[in-house]
Length: 498
Image (cartoon, rainbow, N blue to C red; front, top):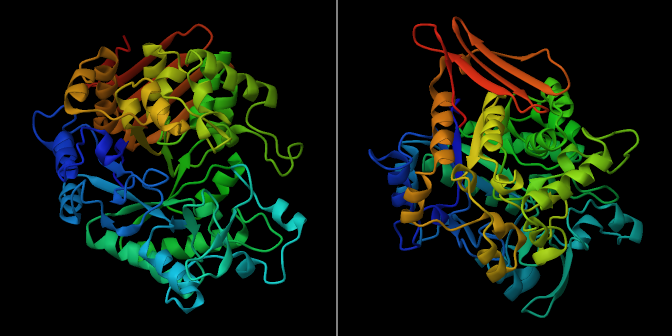
């Protein structure tokens, strides 16, 4: 993976029209001379582009994981993009759509189906039955049990594992059919030039009676095996897990890449409470093989800096619980109450550990603070990713939220070509693009990183590569700040945040 900033985007929500040419249109936007975003990014994470992109979970419930939704284009279009940029795609490890051909065949034929072993049932995990205690032990990021009672079309009755929604049927990943299904996805990706994959929902993939069924030792083993298979095909693996911060450190030691999901709430905490203390504690221990993010297609994670739910006293969070609660309220205040309408039990939202809000609105639309937050992200070791709404300093899409009543849609705006061109002319967006280019091109970021000494309100970050250097200083109390770097002749230059 190149050490350059990557874009995270849906194919159809950044200038798309769902007319079969969206992938080609995105390729042009990111690479054709004169296009607004030409040459800005070193790579792109394409959020689910499989058939179909508009199911129960915006593509994260694929009917056919090896088919490009024809409204976006074809595998040839994907391959053309991979010839210009690094491309990451999702492997939805844990589940597939209840409308998939495999599940429909299973529903028609029951145990006589060739796909009967592909789907996980309750008795496959609890052959002797499950007690109340067994079921309460299962870790849940969403309300309710991870099970759905179903009467198949053939008349057979089953209790199916459905970790997320009843339309997303969990896969028996240890069954030969489950392994073959996932291996087929990897081979398809490799054949079409994809060299990076994100394992979506992999923390829930392994189930074991009497255990949490989330990030168990057996889950680590599965991740390791899957990553080994991917590497044999020339594919790097990113593991997506929202969990207690020590779990991320443990996971990072065993995979190619993890997300730094603690960073977004810690940056917001630093600005809200005018302190760098918690952020600096994390910087001192965080894994370096991380993709740094401030925003993604999901909400702003809270669990990532909180205490471990299994033992809050023994495993405290990066910030005290009262400050964590206050941070959520401050995000709601900064967004003018909009995030409250999309978070928690509101708007059919199921991810109770996330606040749904665009990052720009979560920072109260303060352009200087927003650019400083991006500078902090770009200065930390790892590969930065910028979500398409964040790239354009986007606002909460309350109209889309009202139409769908899906909390996360508040930060999943559909931009047309004219809107992209217009937004790219805003000063905050122009400066962010300049900051991305600086991060991609300056040789200092290929050298050594250091966290410089300073008081609790001060954050000093520095990169040094021979005579090339770059330094960022932020005082969260006074809001004094500076980003300086070496020029071609060695002279100090300064980035203008405003």
